[in-house]
Amino acid sequence: MGMGMNNSLSSKIPRFLPTRSCFFPIRHPGSFDGAWLFGYGIGIHLLQSEDPESMPKISEINPKDNHISFQCESMAMMEKKLNGGEEGAVDGDSLY
Image (cartoon, rainbow, N blue to C red; front, side, top):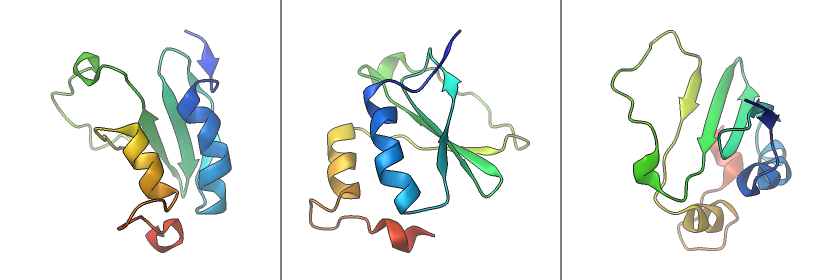
């Protein structure tokens, strides 16, 4: 399993997130499409999948894990909201 950050989502994260937060991209297993970010002593895992049904199902939550995971139905819609291109867009500076 290689370490990577060269898929579409992880190539956009370095331009977007460090300017809006203290989370920065870190290397992650190349078998995952997405980006792994780290800051404030925790990680955020952003996983991208063209087929959400193929994503692994999590049956239990490990309270000792130190990461946060998010899921969205549409990456295009999420990018549009985060970039301020839609009414009700998210102001990244106000999240922290």
